[in-house]
Length: 160
Length: 293
Image (spheres, rainbow over the protein chains, first blue to last red):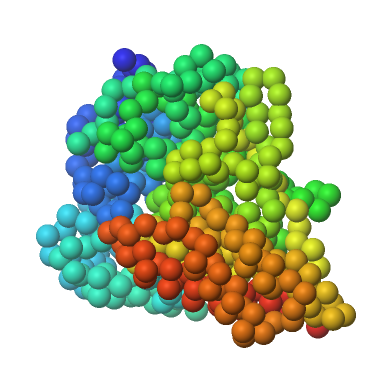
């Protein structure tokens, strides 16, 4: 069984971990680093509840081998916000009631983070398109879209 | 459910990867993104004893253009293609389709070489690339060869490559003047496509007649299907509603879709007919739009 020491920078903290070949990034984050924000959902890259950012791009951590993430920068929902303050995306989700059970929320927040980093003022089709891969089974999509629109509006106001 | 155990090999060069694959043709699989392979492994459909990760091999992730040919390194991701200014400028049909591929997470990790080499039938790039007469560069430990992409696909998840061969590059010649191409897909939400249809039309600028055509279907058979009879039905003619309808009927008959969870065979044939008709019309329009200016 292949075992290998990998270096994983998670939320700015460098970790040296020995992992097995069959270990997924999600398993490493949850079971070894106690970062349980990312959730196992469909296990087939459809639902988005395991979304984390790997070198600034969203990935399904359930379907990335930990060994393949060797040397990468990982951002999980635990890495958002600073000094006990919530990140503006988290704040917007609360203000707009963009969750019920919140199982999908950590993944969605990171999907939104990527979306706004690439398109600070996304058009409505962009917004819907880039979030279509994250499924909320409580059905909070309307509130989620409202939360993201409010962030886009704020980005616009700051620009003006 | 998690993954079964396997050994993980990180290849640092194509010859090294090829040697390993040659030694264990039945047990080793290439890992080049893993978006499809890991899924089949979780479902216990694929049970490789070895995964050979080729993603750490340097120099296989690029998009270049020279001498009228766009060259795409095999490890270029869908995300790279989606946002590449060079692709947008020279092969805009790919920029158009890429945002529709699965979801952003799959596009971040999935590679073009992995997409083609895995020969998954429900996928978008192959019909479009075949409609542009794309070639692939294939390498083993010591030799390289070029292969028309059309000749890669043999069956469901089956290619014509030898076990020790790897795709290293995809080549697409810049479209001829007065060539128009349109890809249309039908899917439910951000699911895999149910039907994909690529049509390329080259017209004569004087007569405005179609001098060459490519009609390629995806997802409605074990491999992408080039419908030559539909292509012949378009050649020598200007754009006409009844000739595009005829090509569409031919395509709907020629394909071999299966009834599955997504739709019935009859439904898929009906979709093929509609998409083919619309794609022919748009490909003609795009080919002729280059006449003005």
